[in-house]
Image 1 (cartoon, helix red, strand yellow):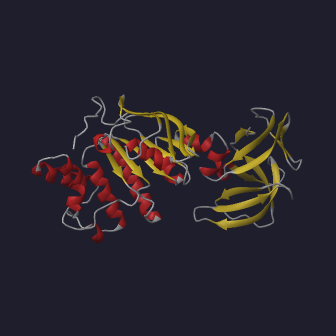
Image 2 (image 1 turned 90 degrees about the horizontal axis):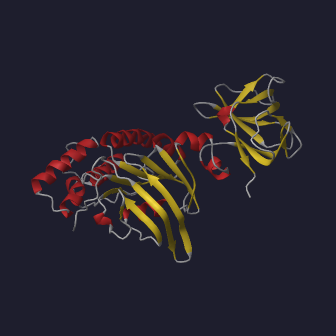
Image 3 (image 1 turned 120 degrees about the vertical axis):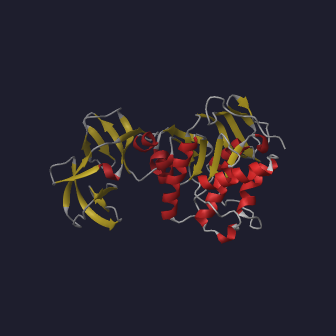
Length: 354
């Protein structure tokens, strides 16, 4: 089995170009003319709900799914017709795909043995790969004897042992408990930066994507809805889908007029900064709402309900009987039924979608 020579002579990581890629399964178009570039050494995340095409795109990059149109290039070389084993990529599967009847050593060494690496070198590289993921001394154990977090590390070591310039990960932490996921994503990001390889990561967890990524492509229905760094994705979503999928948000729909935003129920929110006239939506994150004394803010509201979230109290505020609820987070609980003033610190304006 050939060992691909696809490498970047000047950088450890691989440059990946997705050029007009389309993929169909029968009559179902799963990827629709997707074009994007992933930089060497970048941690790049494909984010979106189930069925949006993110895993299909990842598997197309890996060579597991042949594409119906477009090209995939690694460091300028078209690999679209190249089989997966010649693309020199590391792949971490959602279920880890470890062989239960093989030891940890044999699981990690599998890719090296396929590449006909000498036995002495295999042993040295397996130990080094396990050390990278902090799993020294477990070579003779079996996957069933290991915790979920340790199995995830074994799968990662198996992907890294071939020294790939490109690491692909398909929701590798979705089967772990929340606390372990937080710990491992810190370690995974630090390891990727230290090794300098390019990583493409698939997840539906927006918090995970925001924390780990250099850039994020938010996908829906086989189309990239927005491609940007995490701060831009969160603070300046391109459309309502992105705003709703990435984080919590308040959506105040109405018409932008000369004196502010007039809501559907006739209530006017006085605003001096308006990007356009006409119908649109004001997107406000809960943490961007500030509570002041009644009569001192942009508008007054009544506290309808509250929930304790651990790090903050989440409240729903009602501005008028027919207006939508406004969600706000505060450090301390607000009295139910109390009347307060509401200030909005930062907003995003979305024009009405055609």
